[in-house]
Image (cartoon, rainbow, N blue to C red; front, side, top):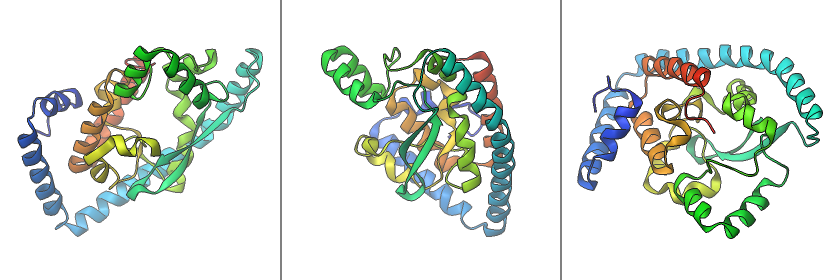
Length: 248
């Protein structure tokens, strides 16, 4: 696949492939990975560069996290939301290892139980959730949570995970353990690297993509990742967040 394509063009190309073409594409990706593996010195310095960027970003993010958390706490208190500020949830990390990812809480307390009941009462929404693994109009999201999501500030606490090494700045987004079965064949490709705070589908469409779209982009990124591509994704992520494109 042409490395000069942007993420949305990559997705269009992937969606146009037949099953036979997908198989051939995966074969070529593996050949590419095997070829890259023959460059140990280059890979070492590339990995070091990525880790240094993660540490720098993690330090800066954690410094900003302190006053940001105070502001979020004050706003939630003013809005009458007395629930916990942070929300921890199990996610799939590198090599399938489960870790607890932290975010600012953007939903009401007991959101999982509410979702189960809501989907049972709204079959059309259950179908939407089955396809996208999220809802465009989620009744569980709080007033403060809507703003945090629109600005992507709910993800900010994840800068802590950059310092611990559980996440990286750019990579496939961490999936839920209950989504493993739905990931199917994509799973073994995606878990080969650390999950990221941002990644290819964040700049290709964010909430406008289906679950299948996200899987395709994450698999493609894991096979064709690189520091230059990471920089491009970071720059596009900043633009998307500022313009609030594709957020829910």
